[in-house]
Amino acid sequence: MSMEKSVNILVVDDEEIVRDSLSGWLEEDGYNVESVESGRKALERLPAKNWDLMLVDLKMPGMDGIQLMDEVRKTHPDMLIIIMTAYATVDTAVRAMKKGAYDYFVKPFNPDDISLTIRKIVKHHKLIQENLFLRKELKKQYKLRDMISKNEKMLEIFDLARTVAKSSSTVLIQGESGTGKELLARAIHDESPRTDMPFISVSCVSLTESLLESELFGHEKGAFTGATAIKRGKLELAADGTLFLDEIGDISLKLQMDLLRVLEQKEFRRVGGSDVIAINSRIIAATNRDLKAAIEEGRFRADLYYRLNVISIHIPPLRDRKEDIPLLVDHFIEKFNIEMGKEIRGVSEGAMRILMDNEWPGNARELRNVVERAMVVSKGNIITETDVIRPSGPQSANHWTKTLEEVEIEHIRVVLIENQWNIVRSAQMLGIDRVTLYNKIKKHDMKKEGAPPKSVE
Amino acid sequence: MDPGILKWIQEDMSEFLWTTVRIMPTMPVPPSSFEAGRNQYISTKILKEILKEVPGNALKLLGITDKDLCIPILTYVFGEAQLGGTAGIVSLARLRQEFYGSRPDQSLLLERLRKECLHELGHTFGLIHCSSKDCVMYLSNTVVDVDTKGRTFCRACQAVVSSNTGAGREE
Image 1 (cartoon, each protein chain N blue to C red):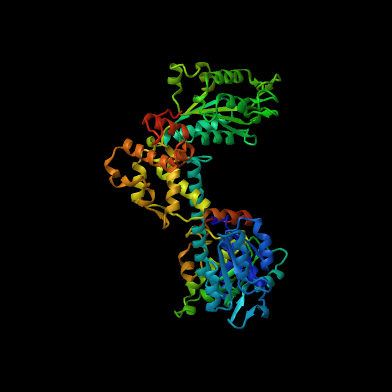
Image 2 (tube, helix red, strand yellow):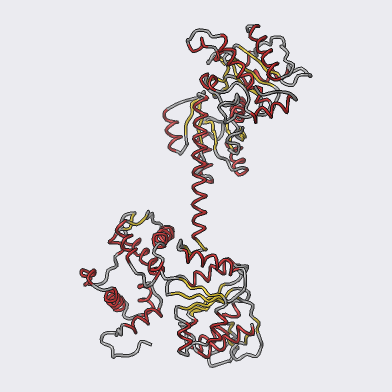
């Protein structure tokens, strides 16, 4: 019986008879209509409802139709507005359309025209809204906070993470460098009831044993030489929040023992202190190492492993979920467009082929860096093949005849030389973390030229 | 205004709506409703005058006029009604074949008039335009629309009218 019942139309006209007759006529067609006599009143009514369409008289005392349209656009850029006028001039019509009016009606208009136009607008508008809604829903499904994927395993991980977030269980995240272990830890924190509490991240690989110890547990004044004041450790800072222990596989056996005690007793002491401090934070640990192998080799305590591994999440490497590459590329472009103020629309077919063919040893982080670099060097609004091929030194001409390993060694060497063997900077440029770079240097037995052979550790 | 047409519509409405239909004395068209530039009458203004004349024992009041009706923003209307109110008005002007340069057709005129009277009365019963082409409440902007749409209410619209008149039937 009814049609288009939920469509809200706002009529703005200074003449009462126009308001009454037009709203009466539109109401008979089933629209929800409100009418006001001035631009000012229209702006007042704007926040009251989700208006689908505005019918605005051009000539009104005070604010005219086009001025009103300008004002509305400031807060409702997508509002559909039809300008009505009794004084048709090409000038005003052009002006109205240029300002973004959907249509321009000269009074009096044919009833059939307005019926059709409004029905067309409403249909079009509903489709746009529906499209937006569906796209958002789709994205939501593929997203967990800052993580994005349509890989089945990853979606299972997202689901698991959402469930785990509600509990306080310890989580162990495993996966190669650059797969997003910290992002996942942050997502779990953000999805959890602890979201308003701190998220404290500690990279266990970057510090010596004693430094890491005081970093984690804090110390009392005078605990050791140089301890001139009380320092609160990360365990204390995490309070009711989340403590993220990155590269847990790299900590010493002594610290493993200490951590185990903390996990078991839910309390600790500052270095050199005697007061017992209770902890209530959730612990998420991560590593890119094979902890089971480390246990067998005696480098990792089995009891700590089982303490940490209450909930185990293994993030697959990017090469095992290549369907995510286009999705991630879009995601990064969107992100960097905002950061760089660029308007890159996408990636050329050839460039995408190159990105798809890459094995991505540095995973999503490496892909992000490649996209970032490509966006910096890109000259147009589409990323092309040349934008995504990295300069790899003078030998880049025979790039395609080499094995991946050869290209990797050569590329690492070029980057290291470029950065005077500064590991941090080189790792950043390569889009991998330091540990991975160290491991690669060790694996390929690479040495600083001119320097006496020595271990990089 | 041809009294024969009035008599016919009185009987037709009375039979269809199962209710008493009376003919009121002729009312002058309010001069203020005249739009000199367009040689038409603004139906909204006439409607306001009609409202003042509704007898206490009448459920609805429908005006019928020979004048060509319009509203300020539309080139013409076949009629107008208060949605969920008391009064409505229907114009014969554009229902006549001679308006479009054809030969007069009395039976076609009466058929169109009945549809538009039911349509405007429907609005006074709170009905909005119906999506069914077979329903008299289907939106008709042209006589072609009037001729193609149904001559009675659809089941859903009829239910609304019946619940208001306390009687009624489907044809």
